[in-house]
Image 1 (tube, one colour):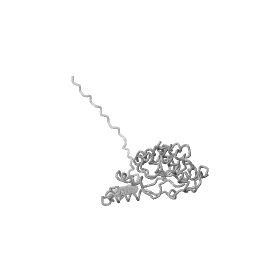
Image 2 (cartoon, helix red, strand yellow):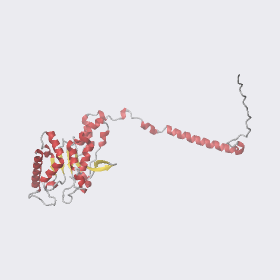
Image 3 (tube, one colour):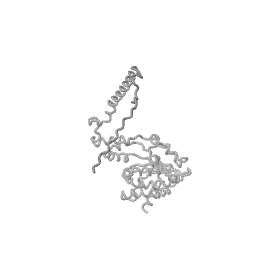
Image 4 (cartoon, one colour):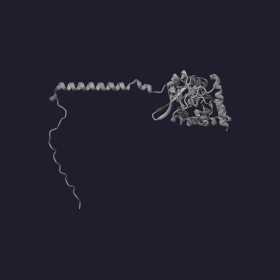
Length: 308
C-alpha cells in the first residue's frame, strides 16, 4: 500500500508595514543629507591619511640589519690590537674596591668607595692609616665587553682578573666575590687586598668560608692583609690566620710543591704589627724596626704551623 504525501498547508504572510531604520529624505530634507555626506567624507579622508603615515613610518627601516660595510670588523683585528682594547676597557692602575650588597634577594659585590671601607673598621679609634685615594674615587671600567660573545669572553677574562688589584671590604665580600666568579676565574687572580678581617659574630663566621673559597686562587701573587687580626701580637696573628686560612695556604703549597710557599705571598698591614689593641707599643724601637721584627715572627710561626 503506497503512502501518499500529505499536502502542506501554505499560510499567507502576515501583512505588516515595512520598518525603516534610516530617516527618509522627506523627514530630514536635502540639506541634512548633504551635511551627513560631508561628515562621512571628512572621516574617511582622516582615516586614509593616518593609514598612509603608518605605511611610510621611517622607524621601520631602523629595524633592518646594517650592511656589512657599516659593521666594524672587531673580530678580524690582530690579537695585539684586541689585547690593547681589553686592557684599556678592563684594567686600572688603582685598586678596585668591592663591597657586599644584596640585590633582589641575591648576594653580590659592587664597586664601592672609601667611606664604606672605613665605616665598618673595628679598630677605627686606634687605626691611624689613611684610606688610599683610589678607594675614594673608584675606577670606571667597561666589563660589558665580555658579554659580546664566547670568544671575547675567553680572551678578556684573564686580563680582567689577572691584571687588576681587587680590594675586598671584609670576609663576606671576599666569599661572595670568589663564589660569584667561579673557580676558573678565581685561579686567574693575582692581587687581593682584604681591608677588614671581621669583628662581629656574623663576619667572624665567614672568615673560614671566605679564605676556603680563595683556595682556588693558587696563582695569587699577593694577599695583603690591610686589616687588624690580633694587633700588636704577631704570634697570635699567625695562629688566627692559619686557623681560618689553612685551606688556601695548603692549596698554594701543593700547587708550588713547597708547603710554606704561600707565606711569602702574604703582606701584613702596619696596623697589625706596629700597635696593640689598646694603642700601646709592645716593642721598643722605630716603627720600621718593629715592623720587620713582628713580620719575621709572623712568618716563622706560620711556617711552623704549615710544616707540622
